[in-house]
Image (cartoon, rainbow, N blue to C red; front, side, top):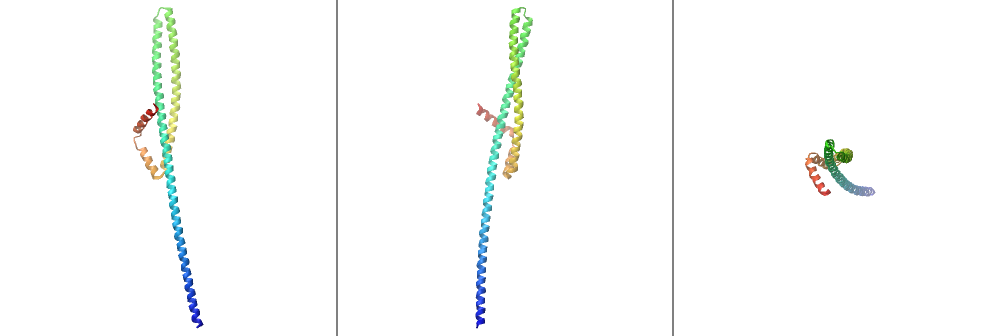
Length: 201
């Protein structure tokens, strides 16, 4: 009798242990599922944060490139204005040289000392003006040379920024770069220059 009871007690004990083990396993499974969901949620949050960071970086870099491009166009417009000024000053120098030559010829042809003195004064004034024009031409050549060096450096920096966008902004950056390197830039630059000249007026 005692043996039957002890076997029954052992069976009940085994059943209770088995149920406890099963309950523990269920708890472990639930904890694992919760942990997996938490990990998945954190991964999704991390991916979203990376996407937002990449988007923000792309927007900042492309905006910086746009500003740099506009600044380059403005510098080119200023270079063009300096070239036009130089052309006008060279024309003025040529006309002054022609006037001086004519005044010298008149002085040689003149028989009157008073007229010769008057022509000499006129020649000296014209020579002074010609020297001043030459000084302005030399100054503008120096300014032009400085601007051309600056625009070359600026273009290199803008090109480097374009490549940085291509290399650091993933597929979106590569598409953006491809659009900008395969478009007819000269035509777009002409439109932008025309727009900027309207703004500067």
